[in-house]
Length: 132
Image (cartoon, rainbow, N blue to C red; front, side):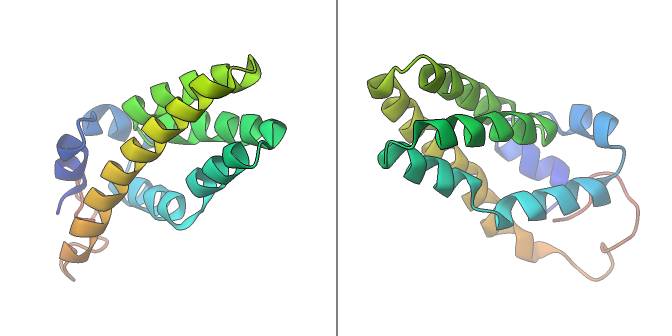
């Protein structure tokens, strides 16, 4: 699957992302790192365990990472969650966390469902919209 198709399927703007990160290889590298880390799970666990300061820090990090990766919908939800955490709006933060996790799962599942379609000919070809 081409990265552009992946972004289209999740309702995000690949062309804008490509204009910022400049290469499909860089985008794919950053996506791989993002999906290999546990920040979303950590955020959920921090909220569940009432570790609010850690959750604020994790949400802050995720705001930047998701925006950089062009996940604008997820970044906006995390921004709302970050604000709720900072304002001690715990019930709202719980609900927003569920929304963040749901949005992340949609993106992650799309990534997992399609990452195995990468072919030898596509690796390192330098084409825009590289296959995942």
